[in-house]
Length: 184
Image (cartoon, rainbow, N blue to C red; front, side):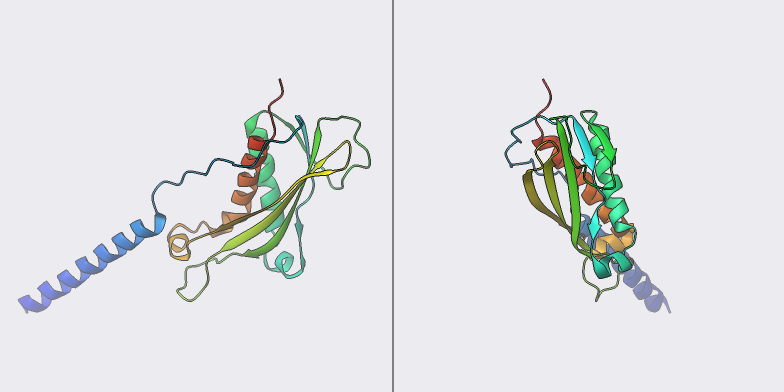
């Protein structure tokens, strides 16, 4: 009787220790973003026009909030920098007389958001293409893809996968803040 109780206790403690070690291994500690290595833009922009995020076909059906979440994350991060006047617009303007206006266009290329951790499901990820357009000339001045991938096991504990589109918008907002030279 005593051996059975002791073995059960050892098994329970071993299982708890294993789960604790796995949870520590899955989070990887504190994350620091890499510094932006791309060159700064040639011009200073004070006004940002943010277009609706394009999301194609099946992704729009599977993840109806992804586009609006990505856009809101971008707008929030640009406003938080306190360097730009940010305005969401529904369509690109035909002509912008102000030379300091940047039009931001995002498109979700691929997206998979896993809501619950299940061992056989792949990790959540998103790939977004950012296009920066000079509002005055209409020329594309930067075109870049961003991607991120969540650890499935870690997301199962924290339930953070639904925030991937908004987080990606924030990452792109940080990137834009880093590459647009500050006004003098």
